[in-house]
Image (cartoon, rainbow, N blue to C red):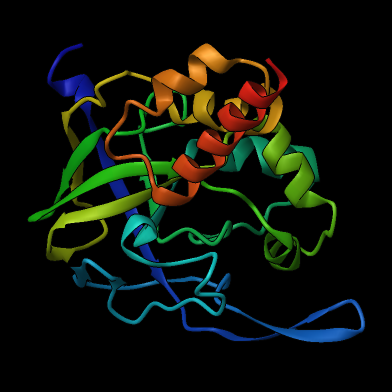
Length: 224
């Protein structure tokens, strides 16, 4: 692949602090509502300045400091849902990217953006709060079924980032397993043990997804 093909663009940086939202007959706290930021934003190992998560057990942390999503996916969902009101941050992403779909990005890839450096750790696992954001309780299931869910990033080098920055891959994940493949493997290909072992060889894989795959292998071993 040419050097030019290894470059995309950070179209928008989106942040938001947790706030209450209605879910059925109850109110929950969620950080799913992200809004675009004008100008440069400090990117730290814990995430972006001005951003936050409500559920710190399942969101945030160094392995999930930033959530990135491809803007190329917007058009398909607008068409399928019959909507034209999407804006940057629509899917709860911190980075809206141009040029990096899930089947083009591998777990373990390293990117430079602005003066920062980030590493892909896992696909997103959508929860019910995405349904709140999209106004559709069934949307997270539809979203997951496509396995175009976006990916989380670990921050290797801190700096400021901003809309318009080049998002350039500088290293490819050691096993070259795409984000989309890893998503499908966890959720829809439980019996593909050879592929699971391959993914477990990726040092950058997040602890949570590593534990899930290791448990899958352990269960398979108990059936041998």
